[in-house]
Amino acid sequence: MNHLPSSFEALIHSLSQLPGIGKKTAMRLAMHIVDHKKNVIPEFLSSLEQVDAQLTNCTVCGNYADDAVCTICRNPKRRTGVVCVVESVKDLIAIEETGQFSGSYHVLGGLISPIDGIGPDDLRIDQLLNRIKGEEITELIMAISSTIEGDTTLYYISQQVHDDVSVSSIARGVAFGGELEYADDFTLGRAILRRTPIDQLFNGDR
Image (tube, rainbow, N blue to C red; front, side, top):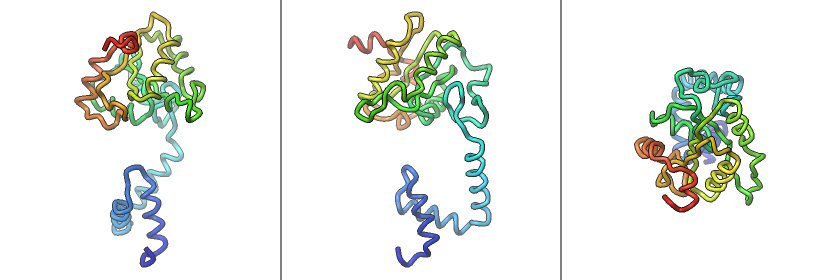
């Protein structure tokens, strides 16, 4: 694209680095930004500065937060004792948008993957186990993708939890071998309601 100004090319390149944004989409976005730069750029820069300065991870669950504790963990109307365990914040958002879960969450920050050098100590598993002890948690709902890494993580956590805490997995038909974010709200919501006890899952009684 030698016919384009270098500053415009740089903008296109930066936008194309975002997930799901190809070169053509990046160019359309760049054109919109430039054509409306008086309104778009100041607001966009302000949002980026706020994210850089304020956004952090909740010290309790790992969700995005502007303060030490996120809005979900601070909400007194959420069910206590029930925690939905997810791989990432995007999975938390996907489940929250179904409207079928009113407990709290715990974001692991990844999955156990020996081939990638990721073990239990690299994830927020110890924090989860500490929460179980400190918050009188009685149920864990494992909303983790049914991949090899997901099942490995699921099994590991289930073995660390005492018998007085029930552990279940969302229905296995959701995003099999893929990611929860691609499941529609209805399917994901139904999978939460039809969750399967872990002992049945790994004994093959599904």
